Image 1 (tube, rainbow, N blue to C red):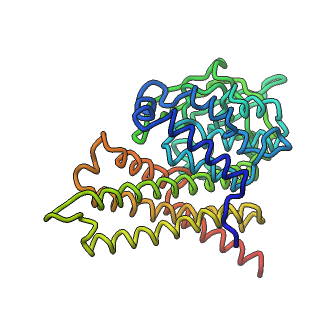
Image 2 (tube, rainbow, N blue to C red):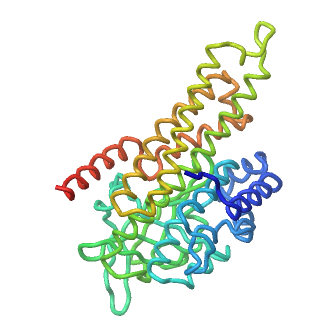
Image 3 (cartoon, rainbow, N blue to C red):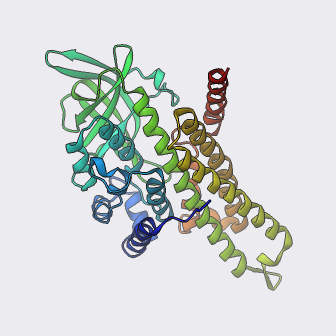
Length: 370
């Protein structure tokens, strides 16, 4: 099997890598990530101009990519530079818009003119859409929303929200302007950089996207693509941590020799290299199986999330331990990569959640074959 990116994707990777290296070095990243809104609107716009947002969506809806591998390489560069921003939320919201044929709203997102994020999780959902309690009610010719969404990415600085709410027995999605009446945001900075917010809706008007009560399958597919994105981001972070640790082992001396000469540390690094390759294979498999049927797609996505959760914890812990106390310091980039890797393990469902889901999907498959 050919695992090469291809000429077009490699050009995108190279251009994004050069741009982020030149315009978004680590010091600039930290200044942005832990102050104000937690992300740079200017960097977002410039990355959109380079095609980073357009690559996430198909040509039929105004993008110029849209495959799971296109999404993967963009998020790989986001992970390598620890770029903060509503990337994952915008990816999911954009694919819901695309599925509903909302090309106008998607065009402004792709151009970097308007930033739209997904508001789905609630305090009691535990990543299960069936537990969503936010309700949409028809009032006259329109709809109003009531409920609370938690940990909405960059909620305080988005232009619009795509809100998941219950209308009747099914789930629906609604576009809500940030300035809409009855909308209140309590935003905060995150431990790994960036920001999120809890959003309260009180008779807040929203515009329905797609067919009322039928958003479940579309949201599930959007989440699968987001899991592909997170997996590729995680592998890029792992590669960076491994490279930083190898460099430290080659330069840090003890008893007059580099500590990388010690066989025990060499064995630990060899184990890390093998585990990272397992994570890379799971990420590639999730991207490849995204094009398959539902059970195939969902099982591969959950399997990748379990793998990056397990391997990510190992890589973060080993990188810090082999650096010693300096590995925990704010000034060292390694500590921030380690924090991001741990947080990725909990986004969109942790290792335990996706292991249980993988088993449930396997039972569905066995039942279908019976």
